[in-house]
Every structure is written in structure tokens, then in C-alpha cells.
Length: 466
Ligand SMILES: Cc1cc2nc3c(=O)[nH]c(=O)nc-3n(C[C@H](O)[C@H](O)[C@H](O)COP(=O)(O)OP(=O)(O)OC[C@H]3O[C@@H](n4cnc5c(N)ncnc54)[C@H](O)[C@@H]3O)c2cc1C
Image (cartoon, rainbow, N blue to C red; front, side):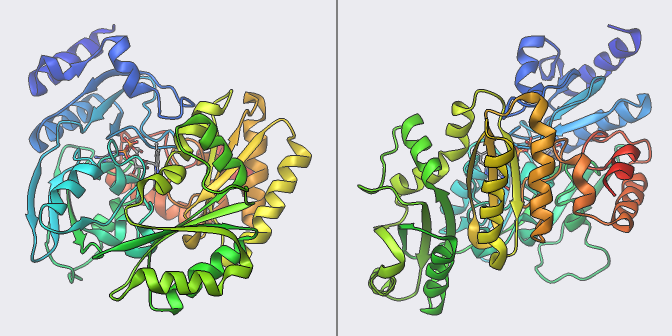
């Protein structure tokens, strides 16, 4: 270890205590390898501050010595954004895990960045409320992480993305200064929306230490429909019919026959119907009236467009398990790290997009296994490609994104850009957009120390992709 690093480590230990500066290789692994196993980094140390003041002092010490910092919450991100570059420190928010207040009248939660989504939802439920973001990684994903990635999740169709629910942040800037934009008001138009700017910034603009977020009212009761359908249009029409009958769509997911079969063979989930269907849609619905009666009426009127259907009162965990186990089972089933491309396309183009994608992959990359699923009512399809030879991963990504662009879609619906999609950002942002993003980055982080290898393209990527 160089003298400079030894001095830095001593300084960090003095700030957070010896126990919270981790340097042994084995313990560091869970911080330097991502959830997918595709991204592996190297760090000088993992530092776990317990207060905002400690975060500020750690960041200031790194700023002085020009040491890059990667913020990390639950390390459930799927684009390699929380993985450090050599010479960096990982700043883990695990110890910023207290819930400061829940205001049941204003419906607001104030909590540390390291609080998990599940903890926030549990705390809200004690006041008869609900945390508006929900995702299968809820037990590990943190509030700082969902803000930094602007996470979507299964309730996005109902409550919007994380940015839509964010009221305020406390965050440490790259020189250690603390930004506190902390107004518990849903109406506040005084100047630029700085919390909104940090939403989706992927640790490149500031380290979020606390968040102030809206809470929602849970529906009194829900019904969960799992229907086997032959086409995306049939699934979209079912969703549309639910809405036109005054029902509220709380979640709307799509799965394929291959995805459901894979989940059933890699978990204890059971196949829902006697005969497989090409597609399965899972829709959770609520209403102020008799939801079950209305749902049954809609299903019977839609019988000619469905192969089969089950209706269960929410939370219907067994039905949800089939959908929520996809990410984990897919990782288990693939012989190589899964290429995960989380994309969105306009709803009218979804069907042609899927057909074009499946035929291109079958014709050009016959050795891989694609599994598609996602929050389809938001236009979001998670394209997971299994068994991809490492050398083919960029070519496959290129091809999928080419098809996404041809269908006027987005190359990142909800997981962000991270390291995985950095080279393709020009497919989603114009040169002027990128110039402005770089100017914002250099205004907030002039030494480029916060997650320097994430999100923004390098000069060569810009010139090859434009
Ligand atoms: C099974 C599974 C299901 C998932 N489902 C969904 C889904 O439905 N929708 C969805 O959007 N995502 C989903 N994800 C992806 C992931 O859970 C989200 O991106 C989540 O928001 C990441 O939170 P985290 O705390 O784990 O962040 P990390 O993975 O630790 O970090 C993610 C990014 O945020 C930055 N970051 C983290 N904390 C901070 C902070 N305090 N300040 C500044 N930057 C920070 C990191 O530097 C990194 O760039 C899923 C992942 C898994 C494994």
C-alpha cells in the first residue's frame, strides 16, 4: 500500500472508527462485485459513515487527496453503477439507516439514505400508509439508491417513478459541503428542482444522505388477475378495459411462456395453468366498489382474447412470486452473466418491437436464450439474454438497442446507464443534452471524483455513436 493510501486510511478511520473502514479482500468482495456478477471493481477501502457529518468529512478528505468515491446503497443496481474503479473508495450508506419521521397527515417520510424500501414500507404501514415505490429488490435496495437511479418498479403505473415522489434531499457535494433542500411541501416552485436533478444522477453529482418522500394511501382491497394471452394487444386491451370500467390499475406485468417455465424449473413456483400460453399478464386492480365482481365481468367479456385466467384477492403472493422470481431465476439459469437490457417502447409499438427483437436474436445469435418480462403498461420490457458468450455481449447489445431506437424507444427505462450502457447513451440523449449534462457534472463535481466512470460517455464513445 502506498504512503498516500495509508495516510488516507488513517484519516478515514479517525472519522468513522476503525470498524467502519474495511480493507480485507474477502469482506470487500460483496461491495466490489455487483448483483449480476458481471461487474467487478477494485477499491482502496469500503467506508461506512454513520452520520451526515461523517459523510461530509469523508468526502472532504477524499476531495483534498483527489480520491474518487463510489456511493453504494444495497448494491442491487443492474447496470454496474455502484461498482468502484481502481483507486476509489466505496462509500456505503448502510449505517444511514434510521427513519427520522413519518407525518401521517402530510403523508411524508423523512429517512436516512440507507433505509431499505421494505423498512420504509413497514414503517408507513404502521400509520395505515404505503411507500409508493415497490420492487423485487425491496429488502436490500435503499432510499438513496432508488433516488440515485430514479427507480420505477411495480407501482410506477399507479404512483409514478421515484422522482415523482421525492420532496427533498440532504446530500453531500463533492467538496464535502452539505446541500439541504428539505421542504415538506408538495407545492414549492422556488427555483431549480435540485432534488429532481439528483434523482437519476447515479452517484455522479452528490452523495445523498437523507430523503424526504411522499407516502401513498394503500387501496382498501385489491384483486390480482393472472391471464394467459396470445398477444401483447390482448394484454393491453385487458388493462384498458379495467381502466374504462373505473378500476384502478395498481400494477401491470407481462411474462412469456419461456420465462414462466424457467421460473417454475428454478424455484418452487408452480405453473399457473394446465396448458401453457404464449404470454401471461399479471394485473393488480383496486376500486372503491366491488372490485371482484367488476373484474369477473370484464374477464368474461374478454374470454375470446384469453386462454385462461385466475383471480385472487391481493396480495396473492403465489401469483406475484412467478413474476418476482424472474430476475433471480434468470441469473441462476444462465451459464454466463446475463446481459440485462431494460428498455421502453411506446405502447402501440410494443408488439412489433417484440416480434422484431425475437426474430433478430433467433436469426443472428442462435446460441443465446432471451427472456422478456416487465412492467408492460409503462412500455417497459426487461430484455434478459442468457448464455451470451462474453465476446458477443457488445454486438448483442448493439443489435437490441438498434431495434429499440427503430421503435422510438428508450435504452434505459428504469435501471439507469451505469457502466453497462454508457457507450450507448447517444442513442437516448442528443449532443446538446450531453453537453449540458457534462456542464452540470463539472459545476457540481469539478474534480470529477464522484463515480467518474459511470453514466457520462467518454469522448471516444460520443464520436463513435453519433
Ligand atoms: C431482483 C431485482 C429486482 C429489481 N427490480 C427493479 C424494478 O422493478 N425497478 C427498478 O427501477 N429497479 C429494479 N432493480 C434494480 C435496483 O434494485 C434499483 O436500481 C435500486 O434503485 C438500486 O438501489 P440500491 O440501494 O441497491 O443502489 P446501488 O445498487 O447500491 O446503487 C445504484 C446506483 O445509485 C448510486 N447510489 C446508491 N446510493 C446512493 C446515495 N446515497 N447517493 C448517491 N448515489 C447513490 C450508486 O453509486 C449507483 O450508481 C431490481 C434489482 C433486482 C436485483
